Image 1 (cartoon, rainbow, N blue to C red):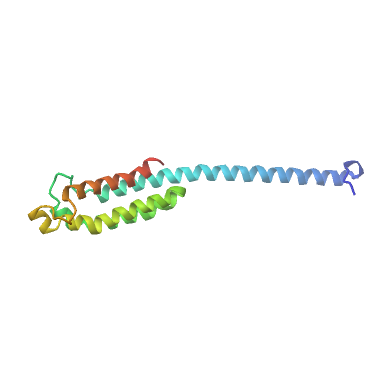
Image 2: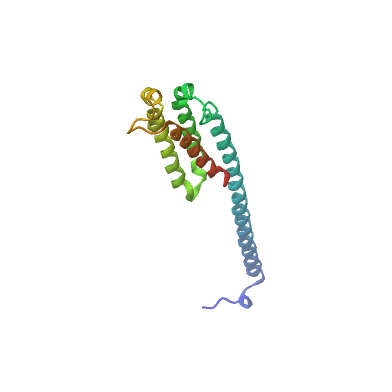
Length: 158
């Protein structure tokens, strides 16, 4: 059976026109909602990136430059890593496809904070110089700053 407008009464034509207008209005409303959510998502990403950068800068504030003595920084390092971890946990969900590499970079920094730096700045390494198996203290300090910069680069791209 073929649908024809000619066979409809005036009331049926009016109802069909109303249905068409409602469908078009619904599609327009959905498109408006879709695009406004896209704008809101990018704004949320920008806000999250700014908050991540400020949290990282605040977390690494107690850590001195590579050439400085890290005596007090070594005691603060576990707290610094916890604060960085909290910032990573808050910012990670906004990264989408970059999340996996971001998490991998965080795991490298976390291992570096918990294992490499304490070993490199241990008393024997500091007093007697780099041991044959231990990491170089200067290189370990520099790598910490490099890994922090790599984490921050994810927020710069946002």
